[in-house]
Image (cartoon, rainbow, N blue to C red; front, side, top):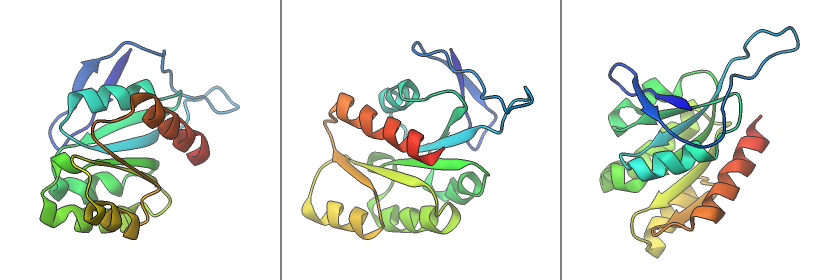
Length: 154
């Protein structure tokens, strides 16, 4: 399966194995608008894991720079956001979570902490993050949560 990652630069194609993801169709046979899982990360293994959790009609967009957040968040269809704090400077993490709530208030948010601390978890939860996890990730649990997010955001 090919997934298109949209970044601030021209789209880059990545090849993944896993479920066959086809665009969803409306009742008239037309391709429906894709819903978007937006991942703020530079970690290819996290991107592959999120891609494994996709179902039909969902597209994975990847933003590698917090400064580009608004241009990604204003897109129609952002239903799930995954924030990997390893990709974001500590001073801008709260700002980024504020941007998510401002520009995609309906989105379900998962926060992946590079290192757990009570302060990091408190900050994430204060910004209405629905799922908080720290590395190393429990892959199965995280995939179950992301799949439930995808189901709830339909």
